Structure formats: C-alpha cells, structure tokens
Amino acid sequence: MSNVMDSGIRRNDGREINQGFLSMNKHSSPQFKATPGGSLKGKLRVPGDKSISHRSIMLGALADGVTEIQGFLEGEDSLATLKAFLAMGVSIDGPHEGRVVVKGVGMHGLTAPATALDLGNSGTSMRLLSGLLAGQEFDVELVGDHSLMSRPMRRVTEPLAKMGAVIETTDEGTAPLRIRGGQTLKGIDYDMPVASAQVKSCLLLAGLYAQGKTCVTEPAPTRDHTERMLSGMGYEVVRNTSRACVEGGGHLKAAAIDVPSDISSAAFFLVGASIAPGSDLLIEHVGINPTRTGVLEILRLMGADIEVQNPREVGGEPVADLRVRYAPLKGIDIPVEQVPLAIDEFPALFVAAACAEGRTVLAGAEELRVKESDRIQVMADGLQALGVDAQATPDGMIIEGGAINGGRVDSCGDHRIAMSFAMAALRSRSEIVIDDCDNVNTSFPDFVGLASTAGLSIQAVR
Ligand SMILES: O=C(O)C1=C[C@@H](OP(=O)(O)O)[C@@H](O)[C@H](O)C1
Ligand SMILES: C=C(OP(=O)(O)O)C(=O)O
Image 1 (cartoon, rainbow, N blue to C red):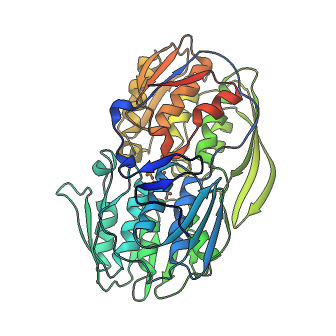
Image 2 (tube, protein in one colour):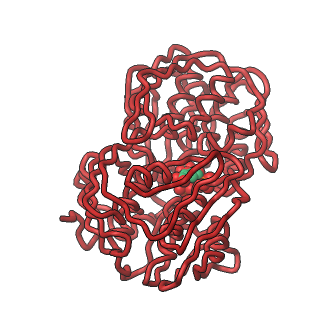
Image 3 (cartoon, rainbow, N blue to C red):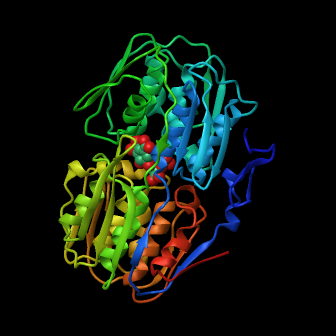
C-alpha cells in the first residue's frame, strides 16, 4: 500500500525525497530576492496546519482502522513524522495532493526501526515522539539536523523520567535521544514550568501507555490539537481550563481528518497585506482554533483590518476565511497572555511592528530564543541590517516603527524568519536579499510561488 521506495518518499509531484533529505547540504540553500513595493490581492489557500498534520500521522498510526487525512502539509517537518512511522512498520499511502491514508497498527503494533529516526528540523516531531516512544517495547534513537540537535530536550526527558521512562541525552540535555524500550510507565500529575504544547502533548502521549492517570497543568493556554484529536478518535481526555488528563490503557479509533490551512503560514500574508497599501486578500479555510489566534488579536490591536468570514467547524477544529486589507498600523505593548497564542508568529509580527507608527514592545517571550533559531536575536540583527531600530531584550524586543531600507539579512536557516523578511519587501525602499532559505520547505512548500501569485515580487536563487 505504501508508495515509499527504499530510497525515500515519492512525492505527488514525482520528486523523490532521498534518505538524508532532512540534513540537506546548506551550500545549496537558496537565497530569496524580494523587490520592493507591490500589494497582495486576490484569494489563496496556504498549506495545511503543521501541528495537526504531525498529530494526524501519530494518532492515525496508533489507531485501530484506517485513517484518511485530507489537507496534509507536504512540508519536510510533517514528512519527517510520516517517514518515522514508515520506519516503524506503519503502512502509509501518500501524500497525494494532501491526501494520506494511514493503516493504523493499534497501540502496540509499532515495530523497531532499523536505524535512528531522523527528524530533520522538527522540534514537534522529536518532542511528541519522545513521549509516544517512551512506552514502547523497543529501543529507539532520535536525531535531527544541526538546529534540532541543539534545542533543549530536558523539558520532556525530565518529566518522562518521573513517569519511569529511560532516555539518554547529551550532557547539554540535547539530542540524540536514546529511548530504552520495555519500561513500565506510571501516570504523573505534572505542573509545566513553561507554556509548551509540545511538552503537554509529549506527556499525554506517554500517558496513553502509563498505568493510571497522567495529568498536565499548563501555566497559560497552549494549542490543544492533541486533546481535540484524541477525543475525536474516541480517547477520553478530561479537561478543565488549565489541566488535561488521560487514563492509560485505552484505544484510538481511526477517523477522517480534514487538516485546515495553517494560521502560522497565513500570518505572513496577514502581515504582508496589512503593511502594503492597496492590499485586499482573502485567505481561505484557515484554522482559527482559539489557542492559535494570538496573531489576529495582536494585529487588530495594532489597527489591522481583518475580517473573519464564514466561521465553521471542520473535524473538531474551527475554520474560517480571513479577509485582510491594508490599514495603517500603530505600535503597541503586546499583551503577555497573547504570547503562547502567537508563539510562531512573532517573526512576522516584528515586521508589522517595523512598519507601524510608534513603539512596539514584546516581553515574556524568552521561548523564542530556543526555536529553530534564536528568533529574538536573529530578527533583531536582520531588522537592524535593514535600518530598523530594533533592540533585543532577554525575553522580547523593542521596535521603533519607521522606514525599512533594503539590504541583506541571514535567516539562519529559520523558515519563519525567511518568510517574514520576504514580506518586509512590500514596504522596503530597495531590494531585500535573504540568505539560507531552504528550510522554508519545512512548513511552506512553494511559498515563493504562492506569494508571487498574490503580488509579492520574489525569486529564489541558488
Ligand atoms: O505542539 C506543536 O505543534 C507546537 C508547539 C509550539 O512549540 P512549544 O511547545 O515549544 O511552544 C510551536 O512553537 C511549534 O511550532 C508547534
Ligand atoms: C517552532 C516551530 O516548529 P518546531 O518546534 O516543530 O520545530 C515552528 O514551526 O515555528
């Protein structure tokens, strides 16, 4: 049933993703060149939600029965998750134009992979899988690219150890993660020190394999796709405002999953259209789960003109079309409670702040320093290179809005930073050249094509 050959995954466009595609040669990482000016117009649909795509493969693989997924993100991060489950013996057909069929093996049907699982650039894959795999019968090793191998993993390995998991990290608490199988896990009641959906999801997934009840309390609301999908597949999750609990030993039932477009990918267009005079753009079928809509709230506080049209629910997740028109923005103090609800959107929001009138202050966002790059420092450096008054602080940034000159910036291999600076060209005085943009493929394949259709003048060059 699988269309995967020994050499790698065959994509629906005929391209083959070879073994080792996740650790691509950075010498060939393209530059983006974006010409100043223009506006964003028309209607478009951005690719599927990355968080939901990961979870659809993980839970589909563990379910009884066949899970059909539509709208799956064919980006390198979610493909890394897909490939990990192929390596653990799950039969998966696709992706074909966003459709993936996963033949579930049940809670105890995974088999030992022949080699370490390479999760590329994807923190979500590594942290969620560490929980899911801590309760298996086999040993497994998790590795990734240079960025992923430097991200903090103790936030998951420490609470997992309290549950009885045995996981080895480096002395710095980073991957490779060596997970010893055959452990008996027991449920814990865990107060998370950081607001992290990855930590919460990791522990809930481990909790499916634990004796008794596993409860996770979060210091602030974070994305709840795991809880929603578990419930949607018939696994009881007991939730109140800040706490989610599962009882180990249950089963998942296969279900159809319709993945909405990713609001984190829509964010570049929300910002681009807000800052470019003359813009009027409709972004269709976007996931507007309230744990993800901080970007809408923050942009509106800045004066953006965003209309939520045709709100509906699709497969347990709220979805809508977003119409965004140019509006003059003003600087604000970003409300701290919005931080976890917009955690991946700050690179784009910093560009909005650079185009706003007055000062924007972000605090309470130290988590940005441990994403694919240090998003506070890398964005501050890039904005300064473009002539913007942007000062990094330990937990955020202070930006004085004003003119954006052109120039050259380094995305440091961070997809969200590359796409954010591309949108900055809509308001820059001269060309913006962005280095090291390969990883845009982790979350937004064909960003350049879609952005060009909407009116951004951008090219990828090797
Ligand atoms: O659970 C998820 O799918 C994610 C959670 C967030 O990470 P943290 O849990 O580290 O905040 C987010 O930044 C990441 O892109 C996806
Ligand atoms: C932080 C991100 O992803 P991950 O943690 O899965 O690498 C992101 O996509 O912005």
